[in-house]
Image 1 (cartoon, rainbow, N blue to C red):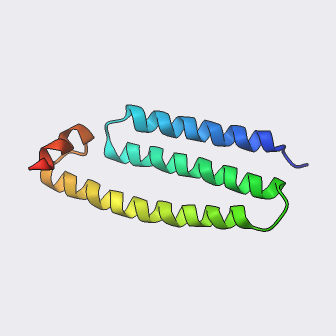
Image 2: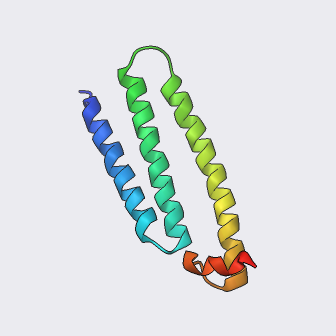
Length: 102
């Protein structure tokens, strides 16, 4: 039995809402990065679900793979920035990062 498209879209919406809530309310840089990853994963769920229920190729899966690759590179760059902030300020609170302006 295959779940209907609306169920996949609801799961994607819940993932997006929790990721957006995490990005909006957290001050810890690692938690903000986790929220961004949740938002990207919600897009992946929607892409694969639409690919499953719409005829015509593997476009949704290819775009999902591209989003996963982009998320991995984004995580690597963001973690490097977070480590640099921690080495300079001894905290990963994003409110303290404005002191790096000069």
